[in-house]
Image (tube, rainbow, N blue to C red; front, side, top):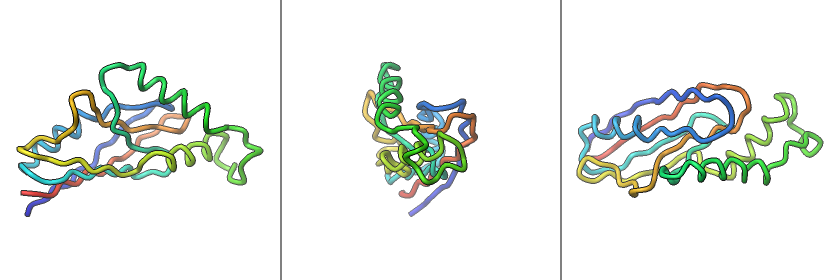
Length: 139
């Protein structure tokens, strides 16, 4: 059994989905592991990870708009307000999505579907540098 680790740094410009598919795919192919499991983990409480359609950018736009509609920015609803009006909504959005994903690897390739991509979902308004820990284990 072999394993490898890598950390992706993703520079965001505000809310939205940032495609990290190619970076993660390079890590998988360079790991030398043919069959195993890739774990992706975002190291933040106000961002998340999604596997989502990578063909039509309208999907990503609609996901961001949906989150804006369902998670209020009305600060009177929250006790945690010291970090600004986008912070508690960002925590809620991250709680509704995922901070960790597992993707099978077979024959040296991860098994994402034809129209799937891996995305960091930024939930804060200002730019951030987010870290995604990648870990692959297998043979």
